[in-house]
Length: 496
Image (cartoon, rainbow, N blue to C red; front, side, top):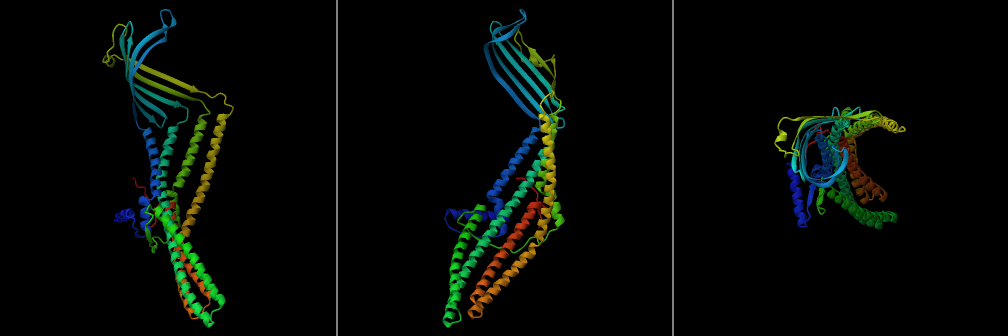
């Protein structure tokens, strides 16, 4: 129901934008947060940043599923002299040949992460037609061939991928949730900047009006001799300064209003009537619970784990590169050929028994003999980077825990700060009203009146700043812990 209400507001705004008519929209903080999630540019960027990680993870998963490919060479014609061996004369001779060939191959492959090897299941069919004095066509088939390729005593990147890639994807999901909370914080800051600018403009207008009225009173009292010329000049100076402050407040209001409209992707000619939030969803949190949720959910800790794993992988790769390694390629299958100079072959015959066996074993060896210490240097650098990453992770974790506890403690005093600021605002406003009354009756001077006005304005802004700080601190805790303290539940990732 709430989302429907927000969408109706947006639709109405778009219609009014087309007709070039302005509208005033009453906007609460929750409405602003909802609009930011639904249509802000930051929400769009957050989603696409996540989708980039999503498709990278999908590609990784697809690499470990069976892969099927079909390769074909439908037509290959050759009419040229080629170097061939003549068994009769036992010499190499250039012989002109003319032929037309075709071939087809199907391949199914499957990677094995545990060993780093790959299985292949292959099937082939070939045809060649020779032209010249002895025209004939020949067929060749490999109905199936099972092949396995494996590195021995070497580095296995698949094993490390299985550890790192799922961690990266889990981190991406948590980073998306965190980016939503960061967007909430930006919305809150724009929202309260507009509240601050609105109140500053209202105070400037009120001060201008009050100063003009007080100046009239001061002129009458000046004629009666109860106000000095110096005090009268001070009031005229205040009137002039109030005019300057009003101009600046108008400019700040315009800038804050446009910033919020642009952030929420609303029409620029929309007039916003901001509602100051008067309720605090959470007034206190358990420090230990905040720390535990931060340790369980924050993606920064997954980043530390990822960095350590990547450095361990680099050490393993550099270590394997220093020593003996070998490649083995084994295959077994059946094959058959049909066709020669005496007769043409038949495609059906090559798929009928009896078949010839097809076996192949190959082993490749790589033995480092002399590299002037290059591999050893790479290994030592990898070990050094791993140690640096581990020490840095411990320090980062310690700072992270300290920050989480400090933020929780700081949040727990926000309620009292807001209440104190609200009381100060009320007292300062009442004091200013009394001071104005006393000035009109000649019981207060201009200096006292000016100081009371400044104290009132300062207290009002301090109250708004305290409210802003509360909401900023609350959503920072949500961002830090990925936990909803109001509903007491973990912020879960929702698939698009």
